[in-house]
Amino acid sequence: MTKRKVEVCFSPELIHLHELENKIVVVVDIFRATSTMIAALGNGVASITPVADLETCRAMQSEGYVIAGERNGQTAEGFMLGNSPLAYLDGAYANQKIAMTTTNGTLAIEKSKPGSKQVLIGAFVNLRATAYYLTSQNDDVLIHCAGWKGKFNLEDSLYAGALVSLLEENFEFDCDGAIAMKGLYESNKSDLAGFLAQASHAKRLQNHQIEADIDFCLSLDLFSIIGKLQGQELVAQVIETK
Amino acid sequence: MTKRKVEVCFSPELIHLHELENKIVVVVDIFRATSTMIAALGNGVASITPVADLETCRAMQSEGYVIAGERNGQTAEGFMLGNSPLAYLDGAYANQKIAMTTTNGTLAIEKSKPGSKQVLIGAFVNLRATAYYLTSQNDDVLIHCAGWKGKFNLEDSLYAGALVSLLEENFEFDCDGAIAMKGLYESNKSDLAGFLAQASHAKRLQNHQIEADIDFCLSLDLFSIIGKLQGQELVAQVIETK
Image 1 (cartoon, rainbow over the protein chains, first blue to last red):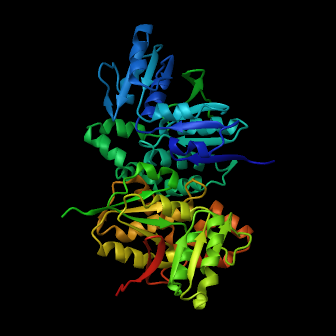
Image 2 (cartoon, each protein chain N blue to C red):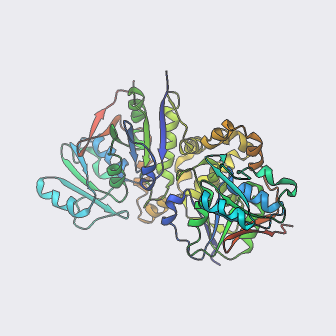
Image 3 (cartoon, rainbow over the protein chains, first blue to last red):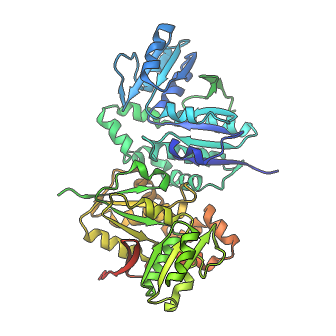
C-alpha cells in the first residue's frame, strides 16, 4: 500500500507552489490565531467565521456575532475581543458565534480552500487530536504555516515539525520543509518555550506583556477536538484518541 | 556599537519581502550552481557570467565563452559543460571565461541585484572564506537561498545555518529563518551528508549517479576565495583567513 504523503508550506506566499487538490490542509498560526480558535472551539463556542478585513468583521456584530479582531498583536479598535486564547476559557462564550479577523491566520485559511478536500486549523493545544484525525483519514496532508507577513516563522514551522513527527509512522514525506522542521522539533522539544523565546514573534508578543498567552499557545494537547472548516465556519469535532 | 544584522531568505519567491538596500547578499545553490561556480573560480577561471536562459548562453559560445548549461540536473543539449564542479578541477578551464545558466541559481543571483551593495555567491566549499570576508566588511548580510523551483530546500538552508553560526559573534539576527537554520545546522553538522541524504534534491541527484558531485558540494573550505559579482561577471577574490 502506498503511504499517504505529508508536506509543509512555510508561508501563504509559497502556497501557489503546492497542489491543494484532494488534500487535507492544516493551517497553523500558533501566535495566536489558530491557538485562540482551538481554545474557543474547545470551550464550546458554536462556530468561528474567519474574516479577512476589519470592516466586514465589525459589520457582523449587528448580525449577532461576537466580534474578535487583532492587528499587529493588538485588539483592533471597536472590537470586543482581541486575539487572546485566555478570553475564551471557562466557557465564557459558549454557544455563541464568533467572527474573527487576524493578521496572518485568516489569509492562510482563505488560500487553503481552492481545490482542497478539507481545511483544518491546528495548534499545539490540540496537536495529538489533529494527528489522530489525520491518521484516521485517507488523504494526503499539507501543513500550511501562516508565517509572519509572508515570511517563515519559527513557531508555526515547529508546529509543522511536531505534526510531521507524529504522522511519520503512517505518512511519507519527500519534502525538505518537513524533514527540516521534524529535525528541529525533535532536537528542541524538551524545551520548546526556551527555544522559541528567541523567535522574533515571541519577542514582539513579550513586548505586549502577554506571556500568559505565549505559555498557553505552547501547551500541548489541552483539547481533544479538531477545528474544521464547514462552509464559511470553523466548527469543533470531538476526537476520541483512546 | 550596533551589531550588524544577518537574515535568511529561503526562496527567490520570498525575496520581495526583504530589503536589499545596502546589504551584501550571499546567494547559495549548493546542489550545484554556486558550489560549481566556486570550484571554477577556485581553479582559476577568469570569470563566470550567469545567464538566465539557454539560448542566450548558447549564443555566447561564438563570443569566446565556454558555455555551461544545466536543466533539471542534466547537461543541456549542445552545451560543453553541465553543472558538475568536478569538471573544473586541476585548472581545466583556467583563464577562460565561462557563461553559465542553471535552473535556480541564476534566477536567485538576478533577484539579488536591485539595491544591494554587493552580491556574493557562497557554498560549503568556501564557507569560512565567505564568513571571514563578511566579518571584515561593515554591512548587513542577507543570505538568499536559491531553493528548488521556488520552494525551501534543505541544503541551501543548512548552508545559511552554517554561515549564521560562523557570523554569530559579530552579527545579530532577529530573523526566524536564521534561528531555525543555525539550530538545525548545529544539531547535524557532525553528519551533514547523512542528514542531507534525506533531502529531496540529494535523492534526485543520486538518481543521476553523481554521488561524487554531492560529496564535493558538501566538503568544507576547499577554497580560500570568495565569489563576487562585478558588473555581469562573477570573479574570485582571494581571502587571507590567517
